Image 1 (cartoon, rainbow, N blue to C red):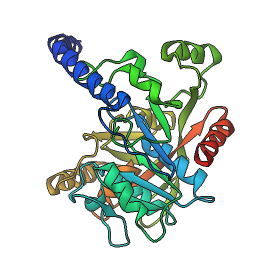
Image 2: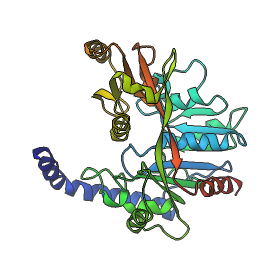
Image 3: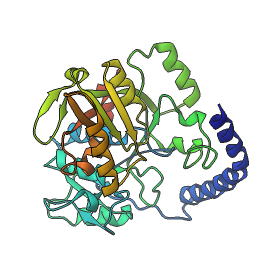
Image 4: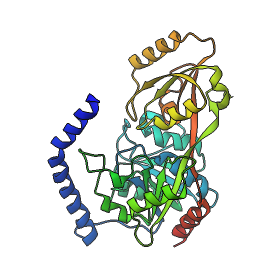
Length: 347
């Protein structure tokens, strides 16, 4: 109660900053729209995936969905800025690459998909140019978290927004979490409402559509998170349904762990949750603390569970560590989405 009241007061106090921020972003977008600032275009199809808000909308599973969809027919490359990586400039992933060099999400993509290219570069224009210089240059490039990177003009923009925090209900930073105004949604050809309940009905979808107000030519899709049937460690896999027999120490360093907590609750899992900030770089002190808390668990059957993204940073550092994978699941019209992607690449 007190925390909520303090947050409301702080939002009111920083509201003038949000107005100034909105003015700056408005003119930046306007200058790109009228050609004062230059947007670079490429003959190679570019698909930008991102959001208006800060993190936690499900970009990684959506990119993995696109990789699975396209990799059989096209040479696919993923370009990310590599958030919180230790390296600088353009880096093309290879067998010697580390999670520290690439960042957790690009390292995850490279680890899972062996027949694609994965690169990181804060300057997306430069990164695309470097990818196109490669001997096996890509047929299509997926830009991770690049919705606001307007120095590149993508052929297709996919905008993600979460069911429980629609951009239409949000406000500009720092009062809210929007990086730019809601008007920025007009650049998207496809809007995906992520992390929906499985049982979302037609009337609820209509309510959301009335809030989003898609423009003519925009298509809105509804997806949810599907959790894997198995937990995976370096040594073995165990059935997800069987973890109710274990006492679980749950580690998360993601923007929004609530869907995972809800999933574990539905499985009646006995867990203790250690929550860290998004993209958290675990220190040696953190590792020691985690191991001590794990030893303190009283059950003979106990494991440490984390997300796939966190596992990329923690593997090899903590024993008894498992992760649960996730994937994007279209609640309906997934075939329409797939066809729109193929048409966008063909055109």
